[in-house]
Amino acid sequence: MKRERVQEQIVKQSWKPGNVLSPLPVVLVSCGGRAEWRPNIITIAWTGSVCSDPPMLSISVRPERYSYKIIETTGEFVVNIPSIRQARITDWCGMVSGGRVDKFSESGLTPVEGLQVGCPIILECPVNIECRVQRTLPLGTHTMFVAEVVAVRVTSSLVDAKGKFRLDKAGLISYGLGHYFALGPIVGHFGYSVRKRKGKKKV
Ligand SMILES: Cc1cc2nc3c(=O)[nH]c(=O)nc-3n(C[C@H](O)[C@H](O)[C@H](O)COP(=O)(O)O)c2cc1C
Image 1 (cartoon, rainbow, N blue to C red):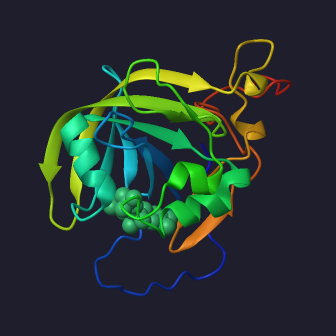
Image 2 (image 1 turned 180 degrees about the vertical axis):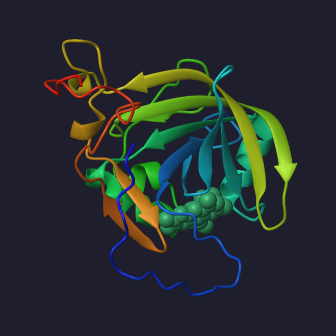
């Protein structure tokens, strides 16, 4: 591949080490739902996929969060991926604590029974990932829950005739440096840089 030459001069600043990794997914994690814990929702940006097989992801939660004790004791949670329609609620769920507020009833979000876990999924979110905690890693300010994905549900209207989930139609949001962003258009697909372009003659 021919490299394009950078025309303008790029000047760098050195910053103190910090959490600048951006953009990140921002998710609504639902938990609770058993007798001793009413269902709750916490907004999480420190999340990521960590293993393909078995499918695993992580969330990092501060121990002082109301949700922390719920996830620690039940060993279960659901990662719900919000769309732009739930952007304001996503922020709100990160501003108030389930210790004082019933976030499901106040937000109007609909709890639906999980398939494999005791906590509810959030109906309005296009993607719902049910998780069972495998490891708990205290890291400092946050404790990371590494969890296996035990069920996945997606909103049917976002699945096309070929069975593909239309991420581009889902209106998902991302988060970075204190701002929420809408996703832009598709600019490529996995492996497109090494595939031959259609119509380009062989030489
Ligand atoms: C955009 C955003 C991202 C957040 N990410 C995290 C996170 O990754 N981990 C965490 O512990 N708290 C995070 N928070 C803060 C919690 O969501 C917030 O303290 C929430 O009120 C805790 O709810 P709870 O007490 O009901 O568990 C985030 C908040 C916002 C708005």
